[in-house]
Figure 1 (tube, one colour):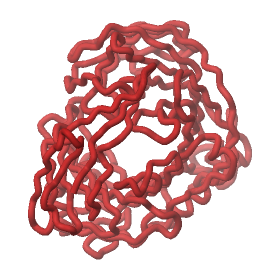
Figure 2 (cartoon, helix red, strand yellow):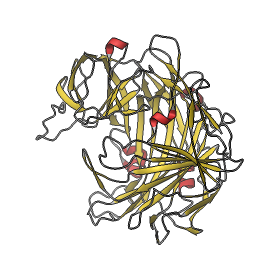
Figure 3 (cartoon, helix red, strand yellow):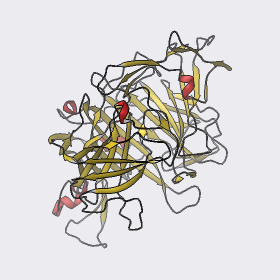
Figure 4 (cartoon, rainbow, N blue to C red):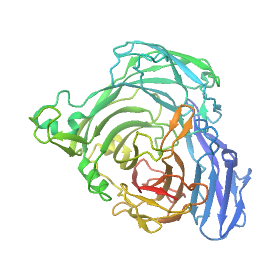
Length: 509
């Protein structure tokens, strides 16, 4: 069995760079298990691929474990398992945004101290986003309005950022937290996402419509920042001035009612739901590539406890829970970023089931399921936006269906997860994600609902391998069906990505 490992990078202002990399360097464990035997991988440098000699023509498990995460010291890294009979796995040969030789850190003391002038007055719901294409980093930051905060966060109505120190923990497709080096052509942007109500003053029947309480945001301004090369473990000063971003308004026909109907299949009583409509910049043009996607604009809406009588005011009114319905919305989008990229729309609706904290705490944990549709903004704006891929059906653990609001004890540490295909859409691959509800201490405090890893496969039944579940733990499983990405070249990446994610209730071994 082989796995090609040539990565293609697209840096700013330069040609593509092909850089082969041994995948064994990215994992602390990597081996194939098939028919009770273990087969080690060998990196064939001349062919730029992993080779596993002697693997029989049978379904195998490619088992990997990532290094420990810097934000969770002392804990093993997540597991990633691929279950497949394929003789060629197309999971390491990818195209990446940015340059190939980015240095990274796992030092939690690394930070940036941001100063920016000429800012629009800061609103109470506004957010900021740090983004670098060339290092593939993205960090969404909320201002801290707590009077005792010592970070230097801007306060409401501020028109500049003085010296705001932000911990450097960006999302990235790379290993660790990449360090930005302008001397190597790296960019760094600070976007100001300006927020406000979709309906300024709901009245009458509008009080019974969740969309009347939706929040909209747009990338209203951005600053291209200057800085010295970042140093691990230190705070790097970054400076810039905001400039207004030109925007356009796109009309979207969001059929939220159809999303809600599919989310009800495991429990007709939806108690907590929400949808987001987000325009982002996908770094790929001809096809998607691995890279962060900065926000250009969006709308968030949630289910509503609405008054039965819209004329009733106060806490004594009878209420009813109303889910978001179909709506034509006007989405404002701003894009200041130079170079290639594809404005992309993501529409996702989710349902949440709240459960008691297994550790006895007073804060409820939640389980989540969702449906999402992603594609080129212009394409999705051309017609009604509906779910394209349903939830998997008949989701069971050891043959027992476990609805999201129920639990099942005694499943063992190697339970079998089974399901049937969605009733509409044709998935390329399924991902079974195992999450724990048991809190652990991270470098920033308690961490809840963390992922222990995942299993990717084209099959509808898998047994969870060793190393995920432990006696006494509390877990739940999410089964994601996905169209637009796959395990082999037979499923080429596409801008049109459809995703559904179902969930079990709480499981204990």
